[in-house]
Length: 320
Ligand SMILES: [Zn+2]
Ligand SMILES: [Zn+2]
Ligand SMILES: [Zn+2]
Image (cartoon, rainbow, N blue to C red; front, side, top):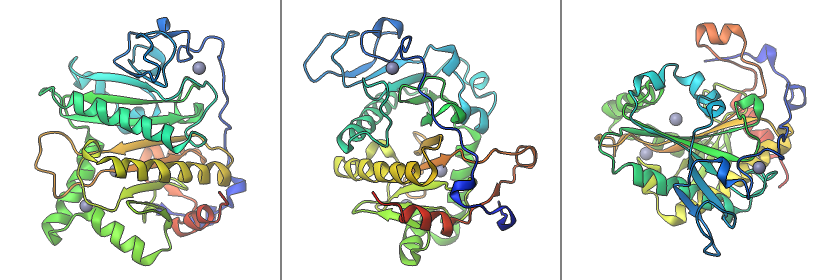
């Protein structure tokens, strides 16, 4: 990780691509077009309407849209993942709202909580399949972040192996634990709260921070204050706290950076491993406001133009 202050710019200077909403006329995620998606796996239907028709608040469907198959996040993190899955696994789309133009930043806390709850329900269900080892939960917001449909949605990929980039993070946590007999993420939470310079905001259960060594400008992590290895095991009050902090963090990013494209990833421990004490689930938000240059792709070093203390200060200063 390299922080280059030579390339430092104010937020206004960053190249950005506004999120464009397109294809409302053909959008397969809009109510009334349920026939364009595979049959739903889960839906929240407050009025008790029948499956695969309108009347839903949220739907989860299998992903059979070729354009969505390997979006940005996965391309960046691990080519060939699907080859190695040998046909076992699941790829699902969480259609977060019936409203075509709504984004997560402007959704109500209750709506965001519903999305998180649906993710939790799906992971708990997939965890029962003994062949599966890991579930990735992520959201690509904006064409520049890899989203091919503008109607807000998240994705879930369950796989029979643990991808390398998850394994690397776990190995780092394992080394820290071996040395200090403490969870590295618990140490990060305690240090960041005590220091304060990289804290964007916190509430009773969660803290949003600009990580000490960000890979991207304005990269922001949301960590639970209470230790827990798995997102899907989190109790309802913490899901509520997460929804509140996600909303305000996304609003801060929207206002500071003029609605940037972003990837949002929930990192949770793989199934069936003795990781309960050393891994700590968290959310990583990766705004796409600077182009990753050939240097960065080629070397794996990321030239981050904004020191995390500056990014946190800008985000803290946003009026909500
Ligand atoms: Zn739509
Ligand atoms: Zn921890
Ligand atoms: Zn992580």
